Length: 348
Ligand SMILES: NC(=O)c1ccc[n+]([C@@H]2O[C@H](COP(=O)([O-])OP(=O)(O)OC[C@H]3O[C@@H](n4cnc5c(N)ncnc54)[C@H](OP(=O)(O)O)[C@@H]3O)[C@@H](O)[C@H]2O)c1
Image (cartoon, rainbow, N blue to C red; front, side, top):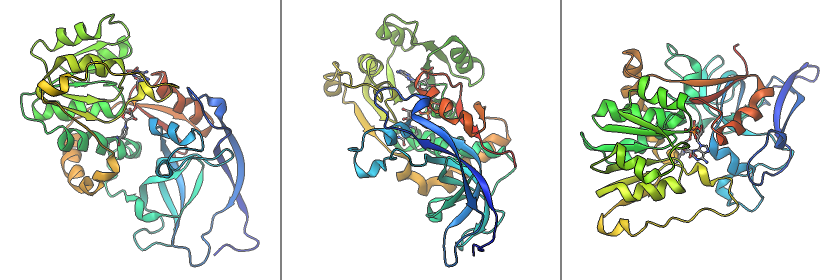
């Protein structure tokens, strides 16, 4: 229980300053210092945690936009704390699933210390023989997105051809590697030479191209897939989706994970090649990772040994300190990040 005379500690926080319209700017957020007493109130079933790593995710932009987004988006309000996925250590627990000292990943605040009021949404970290930051990505929400999106939504078969956009990013790098290990032919697109090199030389993609340097996306896809694409793992939308439709094969599948090229536009771009759906019998399915969290134990069983055996390469882009969190987050929308964008709050 919080004692009357107990000293409060500094709690640096990232706050939404004003609603975002168009591309987010770091000035839409500010870092403030507040204070917090490091004690749970009596009877609380929450968790008091110390945040260690935070995850920067494109969907967070939706939560910063206009007050008229649907309730399920759980919009931030100006002046309120930014929240998102992170890795934290439990300082005090009022919940039977956690005890002091445990590590967890789940939804937390962009601040040094957080009172988590819904501990049932958090996952206890049992395996600590990997870098803890991996639980913001490879072993957390991002990894589950790649795993569920590929294995559950794409219905892959060995030998099939797969195209991934935003392929060197957090989700993309993992989808590509899961698909290679499974036995697909994998090609990715990314926005710089450095990222294309990563795809080909570190992540083991069969081929890759820089979409910013291709004047004709249709021609680039035909060059990489002379026989066509069985599966498209969609991360960007817009012109890329339009071009991909021309190269899809009969009974092709498109897993719609994200459409980052559209998130900051006032008017979304139109898609013109939709008639391809008919004769090619293409199936396109959107998905949200949280619907697949029941697969998390199975996912860990598969992926932990693959990490241990060195079968998965994982690239992170690390920003140090909450002060740098706003810039790290907005960098996702200009492709500044190389790999999974993580913010270090504390090395403990
Ligand atoms: N459905 C779900 O449950 C779920 C869960 C997690 C993520 N997602 C989605 O998955 C996608 C990837 O997320 P992530 O966390 O892995 O991010 P990420 O790929 O690590 O970072 C975003 C990347 O998107 C690319 N990008 C930015 N603006 C672009 C544009 N206008 N056109 C083309 N590419 C652009 C940039 O790479 P380049 O340099 O290559 O352009 C940037 O690095 C996003 O669409 C996200 O919303 C969905």
